Image 1 (tube, rainbow, N blue to C red):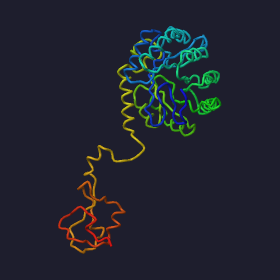
Image 2 (cartoon, one colour):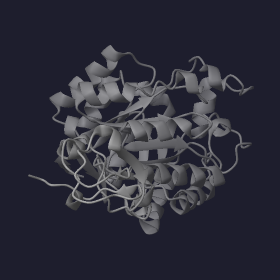
Image 3 (tube, rainbow, N blue to C red):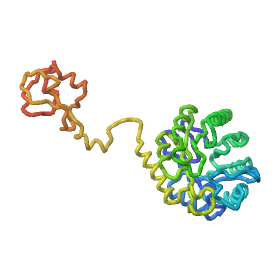
Image 4 (tube, one colour):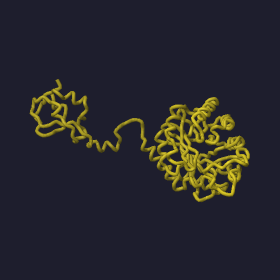
Length: 356
């Protein structure tokens, strides 16, 4: 829970930052449809799939929604209910969330939840959540950000539905509460599902450069490509919605991963991380078995005492322990006399020439 240093922080027992595996959040959201049995089942799936954390949502509808509020585009397919009624029907039971929190402890997976109002923040804080998530809808809600900041816990903040100036203002606010080094900024495009052309992953590079902050990615696409690209660009946190069944009712179900897909998504991320390797270019253990593929310095048939010219030298595959045809090696050979007869093309060795 304490910040370790500027390029890493700790949430519960997980260190997040450069050089560590991406912190993967399986986003349950409201996809359990206020059914405790479904919520617990989703915890099991997230754990089995290899997620580090599972995240829900915590809100009091009357604290976040006007009765006549307009439905977002992706929810217009839900007929017969107003936007207020849709949200009210998904308002979570705090008693159930307490049970889910305890179940996550038992299953050794981190419980997170996105609060949308002050009372929900206070409830989650009393529950003992190790960090807070701020949704894209609240990046410009400085009232809520300040309330969360006063808790002093790590913050994950999504940046959908916003422009650069709004992100600047949110980061400045976190700075004022001395929380920048305990925060993670997530590139987000708030559409469900989002088209790949609207993901805008290069913003991750700009966030890292501009804010000197840990950066993550909230993936709302239908596939895995964007998440893999985000990790390659430096994202240290990934989150993605999942569901028990895409055909279940609810605003986020159709754009969520099903259990088998969640597992594959996490597996692909871990495979990519393994492929990224280190920052040092070196000959790998697997390559060492194939060094004979590398070309080494070879000399043509020549008579003893012949002056060696560049036309006498070749680069051919041979013994892996030969001399490499590097410019600095060639310079040491040119103009030197050959000390013995060379009858067939042969690997060059330093004892072939007079080094005086």
